[in-house]
Length: 272
Image (cartoon, rainbow, N blue to C red; front, side, top):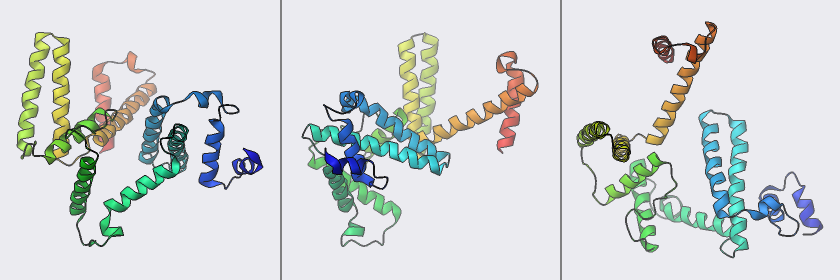
């Protein structure tokens, strides 16, 4: 390790080399942290996902001081995976950085190559998708949907699956057809409820959610973002209900639906 490494670890301005050295020290099998030494790609992956959500949460709350910290936490996850990869002889931080740099240069010929920048955002998006499709083909992926990540949030993955299928022509051309499909799936859900088969009911609920995600895609609305906003709105309005009930010396469990519904309407009016 040496004096130079020790000095770097305690250098408050050591930047990226400092963080990489800290991770190497934590993973050292003889002198590192027992917990860190035991970790693997598989055990760290859930933390990586969690940190990405915390970055998104800080942005949504416009808490820029917290965002700085959350981005650091997310960067640590990349460094963690890079160190494990280096230990296994798979890759290291530099090869990860080189790989994404190569990809960005290749995907932006209108910036780093000789293509014209005189394109609309939609044209650039189409070019991006064409380049990505060529990259997938070069990796010899078997099917159209094969490399859509399994661990994405369900709504996000539904949209990506549908978008990928649409590229090869498997899509409704009109929004009205999607709306008709929603009505059909809602009827099938009601029939499943009447039949009393829990497995069938869950299946039909999934079909309805899947087609709702498809409608969001056709409307160019990000379903995951829209649902997160709806969750936030529900939380905000229910907190108003709790606060108003507290003024009356009550808790929600001491109230009834009629009272809480009236307060919900007040909360809705306050939201505009």
